[in-house]
Amino acid sequence: MRDHDSPAPERRTRGGRRRFDDDEPHFLKRGRPTGPAPTDPDEPDPETDETWSSWDGALHGPQPHPHWLVTELAAKDTELGVLKTGKEADVHLVRRGLPGTDRFCLLAAKRYRDPRHRLFHRDAGYLEGRRVRRSREMRAMTGRTAFGRQMIAGQWAAAEFAALSRLWEIGERYGTVTVPYPVQLRGTELMLEFLGDPDEGTAAPRLAELRPSPAELRGLWGQLVDALVVLARAGYAHGDLSPYNLLVHAGRLTLIDLPQVVDVVVNPQGREFLARDVRIVASWFAARGLPADLVDPTVLTEALCREAGLA
Image 1 (tube, rainbow, N blue to C red):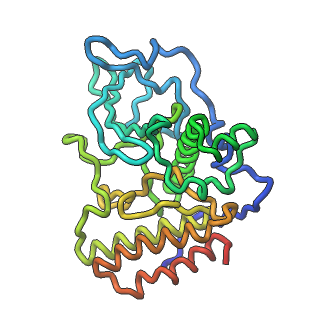
Image 2 (cartoon, rainbow, N blue to C red):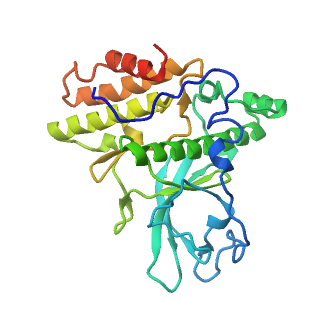
């Protein structure tokens, strides 16, 4: 494992300090956009089925915004199809363009499902250490009522948006972790940077879909270790890491699907979540030919625990 010019560990205790997965993450308090939208952004144009850009009514990602991002209020969003379906959410491809110009960008819209059709697997463990002040909400979430499941969906969306924002800022500064740019949060819909082929409208492949050469495999493993070290130093584990939520885009390994990101210091099961993340991805790399001593999950887990201050 190499040394990293990355952030110092964020030491936290189980009380007092607010975190990104509290009721209202600190990132979400950043400036809200003001001023009226051109019209109701949810009202489709009857002729084109376009909607006005939802940018004005949303919480925005880290600044400075990327140069490719269309933020003009006169822009329109067009649905282009489904990129991915999952247990908790579906991801749609959206084109946001400025009418009368060639200015546009492609976005991945992650939409958490209706509570009746949503399956948040193992959410009880992930919710440990996350604070909800109102006892009614906490009872509803614990009892998995329809209202409680909606509350859980809102927590997942806000936690994922805040985690992506934090990791994006770390990645921009240190270059050792890559996530899609979090464009905006609106209700339980996340708009993210689209990673893939813009001409074909196809998403970047997941790691599980690839058959990398030995050299590529070693390089991807090195990128993953770098990312896990940065996460651990910041006090976090992915929480549901697998070859299916790692994309490979332009040679870079990219972390996705972060609603269940775990604060390993505050969550009583933090060490177990971290160890499971490592075990799953290490098994995949070992099965494809990396030497066992290079992908030893016990060695890596202990190293990450030290980085997180858990040793």
